[in-house]
Image 1 (cartoon, rainbow, N blue to C red):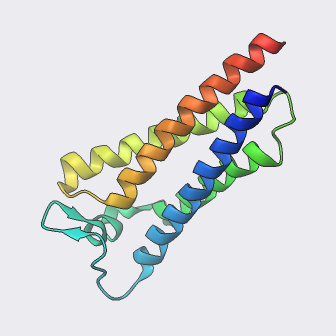
Image 2: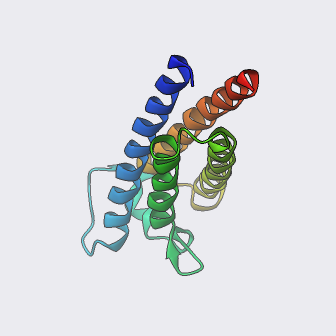
Length: 145
């Protein structure tokens, strides 16, 4: 593994850790009984509206919990399993899946709820960057083979 690849794995791990935190905050707010104000900026930006809507649960599982698990998997792949030859491909597949889910949720925010959640938008940004970096890792690993 090249030094560049090790740095990319490290950046992905840091971004995935930030994603775990972001999703954990969203999960805490999903279950909160009181209204939070940290993410309320008028009618267009309100995390409570998004986090407590019917779209915040998928098959009985809070979407934020899915985020914690997904980012945890990305974190594990980019740290514990980074030495395995198949990890760059697995990391890219997981990142693309996460990005697709984030895009779907962003669509719900934009066209169904008409309300934005800053935590959700941050998660989307994290997934875009992680997916790009995972793509670079896969390309570099294929060039090494």
